[in-house]
Image (cartoon, rainbow, N blue to C red; front, side, top):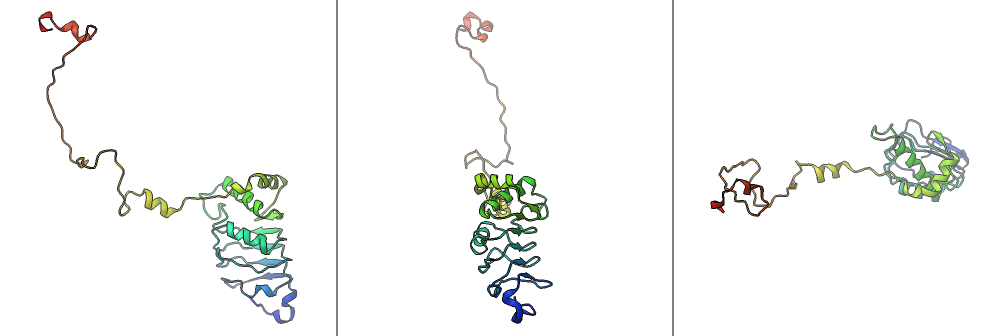
Length: 210
């Protein structure tokens, strides 16, 4: 990541934005020691994203990348960019809003905000919305338990799909039972004998039959 003009002004740049270039690695970024704003939107950055220590960085946008996990990313940001004030992760799988999937709702996104604010309490702006005092208070008390977790599709299809290879559907019948398609029936007459003084059937039995 060495844009035109780096040789003369690189170490003193305060804003770096990649335009019309797909970035997979942030190698070389450690030479921008005075960087304050970093815009990395529309790239192929993944969960293994590694930033150098940038003590002056206060704005970071990583919109529309391929980030799907928050824990390691937030721990890393807390270590290398301690003065971060603005963070945007819109368009990543890890950001559970309706831009990513219609299965997400407002409660999912709000829990996501609480979790991030718990990890990065110095943030003033998250995604496209200012951080409120109420959010900070909620994040401080319950943010650690607000991580949004979704079931994986492969587990659903493997563990619960009736057509999966090697899957045996549960049945309460013993293993030796007949196939469910092998229907058989029995017809017979049964003679009932009533016993006891108070049996209703005794009213229809003659004395010589007792």
